[in-house]
Length: 99
Ligand SMILES: [Zn+2]
Image (cartoon, rainbow, N blue to C red):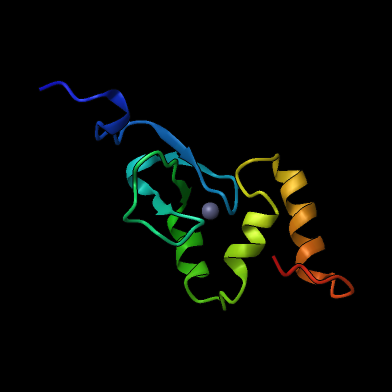
């Protein structure tokens, strides 16, 4: 049976760490799902972290991190825009971002 390419296991391509921008082979990266659900795979594109970033991130407090990342449009906009939005959201306490 030939499976659609989307569902083939393919560890040969390179991915980019969403945290530091490092390019690394897929098999050396850790999947990062910004929605926190690694088990629903249909129609999803995973983002990736390199091992050092993955290690570092798992020790950070994560309260609100996912929603901040989503709101900052992680992975959808350029790194510059993302960081600008992220820091704006994270450190601007004059505004409430409650949705
Ligand atoms: Zn990294």
